Length: 83
Image 1 (cartoon, rainbow, N blue to C red):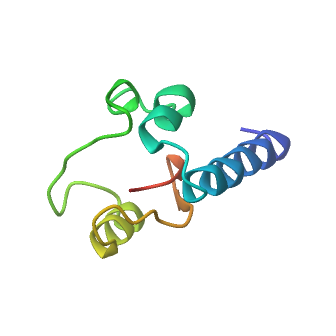
Image 2 (tube, rainbow, N blue to C red):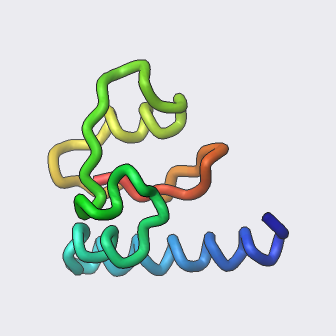
Image 3 (cartoon, rainbow, N blue to C red):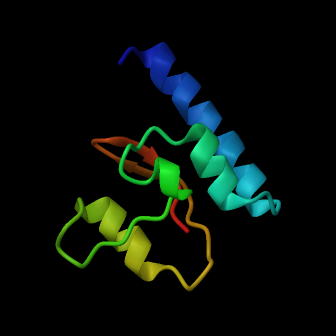
């Protein structure tokens, strides 16, 4: 992915984070904008146990309280917002 594409993706995820934190429906945002085939159609819902995800994703996910929205998490797979 080019630097310009990365900048565009980062801007998009930052905008989505703001929308989610401003109260828009997280599941609807995930269904519309997620690029993850494993959770997109489920409104972003994805269940996993410890030791199954990359460390950055797992650390963020397991540090959140119920219904808390993470900051943007960057992994080798891209940008993520976790709820």
